[in-house]
Length: 298
Ligand SMILES: NC(=O)CC[C@H](N)C(=O)O
Image (cartoon, rainbow, N blue to C red; front, side):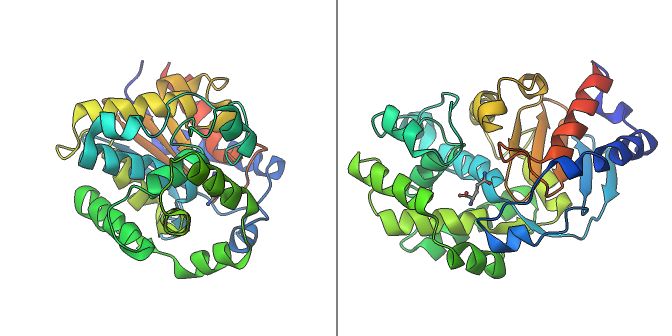
């Protein structure tokens, strides 16, 4: 495979022009009003290697919420705090066969959250984050991430207000099922913590810095890094995780804000932001770009 730093800016710009032609195939999410008002043509892209080679294209200042990309980092935080056994006896690591907020999947699994990258698993992990109130749980995660990665994450209160403005019956039903099956202690705190961590926000460079925690940070054990890589290969892109070949080579996590983070193990990361989503909740332009990069490197 060619090294990640063989990708030059002109090549990237070429792919971005092509990616922009894909965005009409995607939709903005309508169940979080502020996400539905995003500029579908907004795009930011940042490639960063462990020897600090970087290529930046698009709007570097644009901030956006992590949404489900945050699930990667609540998992990493809990693994770092409590270890693999504690975490993985409370959430599975198998790929889901249903949408990321599916109650059917949870019920078929007798209330055991199938993996930490779908909402049932993420809500379960949110209930395990240290802190008395949901604000503390979210803030503790935010501070840990900023201290470990050098990112500058903040809680986007406007996005949180927008998330709270429309009740999310699917997530409420998941939390009730998890509580019933004994995987969730305090339903209200876990749900609100989950909503808050989804609204942690930053720009594309912040996202890239977070990604580097999964490449070479001395603060993260290689064992925990490998666990997260494996789980991303298995379920980072929901039902598409197995069908998109690049995901086995470049474990990737998406979010409904249009954020996407791909790991190139031992080399670096690729961070994308483009709001239009496909039917599985994955950024259309983000998937296009990562596939182009995978083809180019191989
Ligand atoms: N896939 C996502 O990004 C989903 C996150 C969003 N907060 C939700 O619970 O639906």
